Image (cartoon, rainbow over all chains, first blue to last red; front, side, top):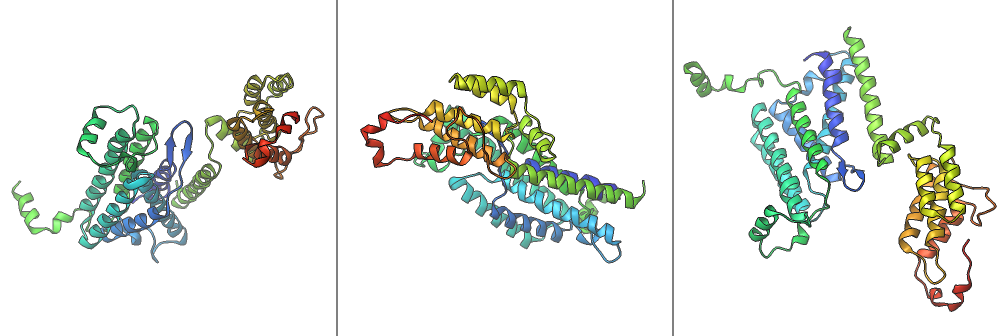
Length: 219
Length: 166
């Protein structure tokens, strides 16, 4: 990995995610600090990244590197953690039953991924799916349910959720700009994760998979 | 570029960016004007528009409070000048004051404005030397606004109609 990527690109991307992750646009702009639980989720996500080889801390901090290079590597790790915290801040609803359900679901999902020890590519795909589905649920489904004006999606969802009090599901209503900012934030985050220095040998995990190797040979 | 230079620049930029983010989350600016104003106030370079402030003061003294607040907002778009915010709070007090009852919504906005005035003051205390005002400090004004917002038995005292606006 080039020193420019380590010193400029990754910290800038992660800090931008940390900045945009709390932005909510309503009647005024609000910057929401991350809830404590997102620190736990971020910690688990960093653990998953390290275990899968998507993040190789030894390529950022080790005895063979100069102290200055180690400091630069530490900045990458710390900013990645902060960005993960804010990415979860974007993904988790702000109140009510959805907040509890999302938090528990993400916690179980991350623990499960940690236990499964997947490779780098699968972890990155999994992260994309986690944040993508959280985005759709929060900014499209829950936003439609919380919209007092309603629409076809709200009518369909109300019909599906017959008997459930909407008060437990509805969220603070934000302007559409919030959803666009959230989308950019999560895209930047997943993109930055893909740029992290990975463990050698984890770059192409299928090289060690004999079945995949055979398939590649004949394709 | 040498590697050490790249790393030094990267560290400086990352530190500055991180400080900026923390500052934003602490100050919570609502608009770009507030953000730039707060930044310039941090380095002591913020100045209000004196002409707009004079207009606001003239309208305030003529009891045209909505117009006065527009002028004060023009004078201090970043809400960083304690004196202007004090006058905005006072305009909410005078507009919301009533002989029978006070307008709670205006008084609540007055409390927000006086809090902004205190936050913007260097030592956290605001004193305005204006003979037209009976409440000349942020503490007095805030206490008056909060008293107006409280519900108590004394509100039923019919003699309250003889009280005077400050």
